[in-house]
Length: 336
Image (cartoon, rainbow, N blue to C red):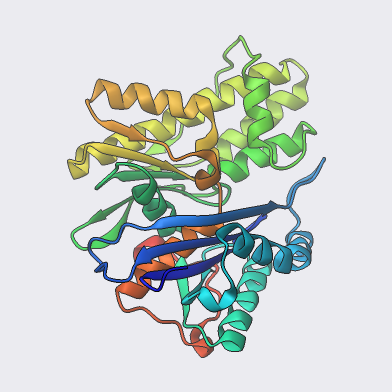
């Protein structure tokens, strides 16, 4: 690595993914014009054939592949650990069992190799990696993942939440339904495949409250419909997607109208769903806004987003002393 490059190694471990990414930026870049590069992005995911994510098992998975993922990322970037300038890690929000593994790995690297430590907010990193890798300049982020469902934007000098789920994340809701119908974890991609074969829309509750959404009642309703034996799985999956995605698009459009912004950025694992992308694209076209969708490896949880957020935070003067590096499982976007 040339000496004129500032390098961040990022560790992601908020849920079922353990990711290690490496990002760099020219050392003369100031914090308002930082335009970096992603040098590596290694993703290791905990999955099951049936049932949902079990935090202890996911954490054990992370422990087992931690060293492997770090080594693979350094090899992909053609770097050695001494070439790295800072160690970044997901400090929150997320599952405590999983966050602790990434935080412990980051602290170890920081202490052993005497590198500054930077704990970053996972939600914000989805927005910033999207800005880095697309032409989006000042977007509204529709952030849809397992535990998180938020509409985020940077407004008046602060990251703000313009709408969010009142109960569970859309991804967790999809995973819970997938568990009920016996198709394993993660359930979102498998539900998308089943939905493609659905032909009949089954009416479900539509729950938008102002700028916020709620999925708990929808989940209960659709589970009861499935247990009744009166509906095909394909039709239920199709109907579930159509309903909850329409809710998400509605609140995203309201946020665009409220902020006056003209760019919508997608982030989070659920944003990989091609039907959600299509619905967002239609909405943006109708209101003459631009839609930005990063490639899949940067939509799902990944280490590159943490590495890049670490760069931005470091350039803005943030440091995380080891004694203040405790995980923050409930760290809200608007507290960052």
